[in-house]
Image (cartoon, rainbow, N blue to C red):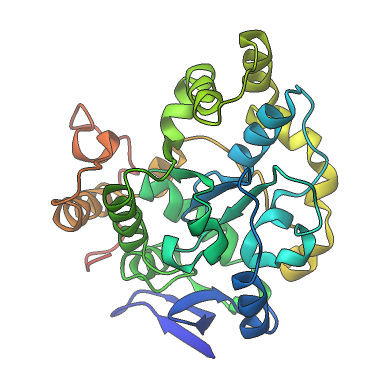
Length: 314
């Protein structure tokens, strides 16, 4: 069912989505009920690896890294990672030999039952929600059928109210934390995007250890170098021109925009950041997982945009 969400008050912003089973999907996805049914019947292999994250948290990047680790290679795949996202349709991947590196933006309980029953290894990628919001603003508002009209402040308002694609970041993060707490025997590895950016060799080595892969340090170092944003963008030119580009404004698939961890500071005003941090602390106060970049930034200078453009709440 199509829904249109409008930002609060005088903030400019409206976006159209498709709702199914309580989740918000891009309006461009056809026949979601049929695809959902097909996904739920997916027969996972014990050795499949699932990268689970809220959208715009680094799935494409980590998919490349894990694929290289699994294949013990320093060559970047020519495939489009989106092809391996379960919500995009399992027919693309169910005939491929395991181990398959798959992805999903769904909650744990919404994954195919076979993944949960076989306790497939899961990599839960988490990124600073401010960076997620900015990246989502540049990606999801370009989907033609989202019929987006509005400003950054309007999108941020919708993001904080969970009225964007794939719902609420806070709820998504909290539900995944609950899964990890309630299922301590399930192999779930948490990877923080910002940590991987700062020390990719260390984080990728931890990934290899979690996946029980014997990969030489020299290969991991090369993988860390080859998967830097500048190299990835060049290697994925063919993917950027993929047919999925027709779904977006300008007929270009808007991948690999910047790939840096603090680009959000160019969009958030000081007021927006202060309000965001307060909302984060209120909604995440009972969570074990806390993002250091939000709860303890280290100084009072956030580096955000200086001017405050909106007097009302985000």
